[in-house]
Amino acid sequence: MNLRTALLVGLSFFVFLPSTSAQKFEITGHVGYQFNGGLDLSTSLFHRIEVVDSANYGATAGFLFGNLYGVEFQWNHTRADTFAQPVGGGQDIKVFKLNQNQYMGNFLFHFASQ
Image 1: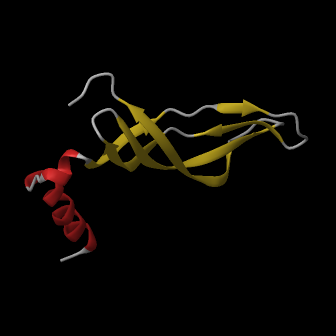
Image 2 (image 1 turned 45 degrees about the vertical axis):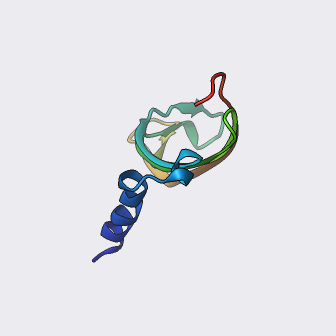
């Protein structure tokens, strides 16, 4: 059994075996696509730098304190190629691969109880 299969089986327990703690605790995953842009530069080598659009993925874990309040932690990862346009023209040059991890802490308030 590889790591992905073991992770998938482990996460499926949260979906198929609900319990009383499942009403307070939640783990979700997400997959998406990120539209990136570029930036004009004023250097002697490059005129512009562009980050290529890329897929992203991540997970969110949350906990509810009572019926209305909660906290959650969210992680998002994306990896995109970055190209620079030379000042004199010509083909774009790949300068680096942008690895980006975002970590977010959220406070939740529900306007209605469960």
